[in-house]
Image (cartoon, rainbow, N blue to C red):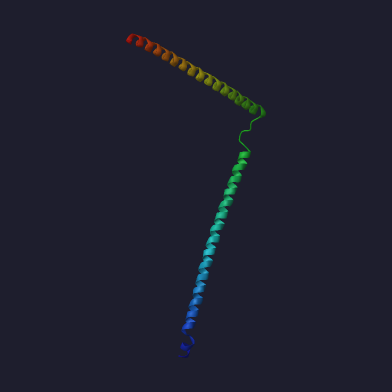
Length: 127
């Protein structure tokens, strides 16, 4: 009975509180370890992405076909000719559009003149 008097309700409560604090500490520690592990995985993934981007950029710097100065000048000449032709085509299209518009307006004007003349003739017949 002497041992029962030593372990009281307050001691048991204290031990339970201490045990609860240890459990809470372990849970918090595990959560922090999980976050750290996730972050390290994310960092590793970012490193892999950077390596892939560096490899891709390195391949861009060394194309499979290298053009000589003569080839590039020929390409530039063809591009300039294309620009001149495109300008010429645009000018011709614009000229054609304006001529068609002028022709349409002349046709409308003649039709209206003919209708007015015809109307005058009809009015004279009625009077």
